[in-house]
Image (cartoon, rainbow, N blue to C red; front, side, top):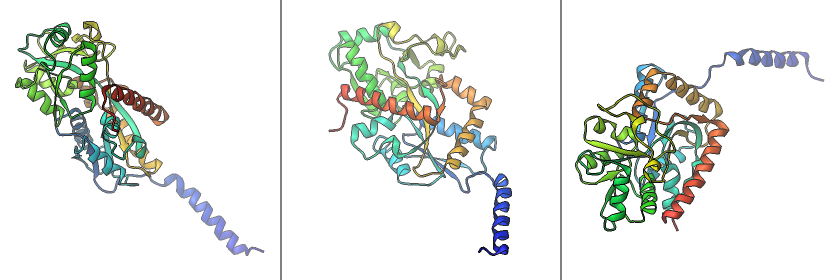
Length: 333
């Protein structure tokens, strides 16, 4: 028979826990948050991470600071493996781009996006075909004709890394034009834009945010966007053009389209309330007027997903990249 006093103590303890539960605070970071960028400085992922770092601090959205750390080695494998290996650490997040898919497929590095904890798609990023403002190529057709009619490899395309999204798009252009292009890899999108400004390459497929300042300065010319429809941003960035004025590549006879993920992941083994903290944090960031300005400036596709919808999107796009890289001959043996 259970002693009445013991029964009372158990009931009192249970009641106390029930009363305490609604007052228990949600998880919050207790030390600085490491924000890993698996790419070089100056590129689109780096710019977005540092923008988030700044607005979170400015608007006091987190009790702990965010520290951006670039880990670009091995086409981003350094960053992904670091996060994968830090199981259960809720004080680390990583911003992802297409190397989330391309790096393991191209190198065989022991990593897959399922090794991490998906948090949220923040946006999708566009790609634009850029040439130097002094180039004789004024349209997509001019560029495609130059590739088609020139000697093989006579046109130089600058891009970020090897066997990643920039080179995948370059291979897609080659297939459409029926002629090889010389692809020149650089460490990051910022460096790629500078190389085009200096006429060290003849074209790039930089993200809008990576080339926007050079376009404003009259140094670069956009020919087309690799999407199925023009971008919606109508504000003029130059005297005559805004993002919405850039035609689709398909409209100029180049039937190529490609969008890139800007998403957030955490290490494996984190708890649901820790994931929820970052979902809430990014919801606050996306509600800021500064976020809208950033989206406008970078001409992002503002699609945002989390939960099962994000998981499903990741699986579908992993398979799409596997097909693209197989067709390009980029899959690891």
